[in-house]
Length: 253
Image 1 (tube, rainbow, N blue to C red):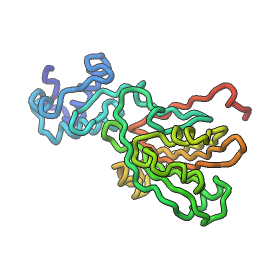
Image 2: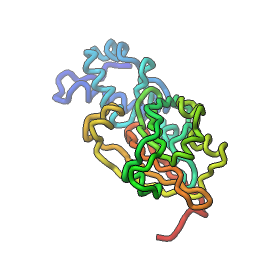
Image 3: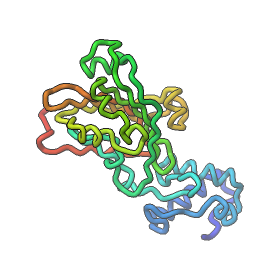
């Protein structure tokens, strides 16, 4: 790599370096999924301070040109491998729904019986304050906190999860329910952009009020009973949502 930093330009060095790296990505020198040079190499090659290089990498990450993987480095974003599949009548946000070779980790934050919150009570058609099983999880993709979700289920449905791997973050909730004979017959999903609360910002490592994607869902069984309501908050700079619907799922406006 040649030194492309113009020391006489009023353009900040970190933006100049970002433009250089963006050009190499656009030219295919750094292909999708490829690792770009590390901080130390960029510092030496362009004679820049480490803080400047780090600002460049943060800028490229915000532009979704690269993804930063803790302890591994920076990789060119492959948008084909950065999609969660949202299916109208199937599970969502489960490990098997993610395409590509990303490393997905799930941390179970709580799995408890608690009084149902008002919004979940409406979705599950329960009396406010009635006990429900709550499953709260944090998902990371390649080490980056990308999704914070909570599922609320009627107590009898939650009991089906007792001692199951899903409560340790190593199995799919929907697959576990299917194995227990509980199948999604229909579902209603809603997506909206919202500002991150202080709690969401802390969990997803974002500034407070940063934009996040809020997804809510109510799943029903063949008898029409709502058995799962969830709320998920997604870092839209980390994941792209791809919506897939079968022909039979589509209705008129």
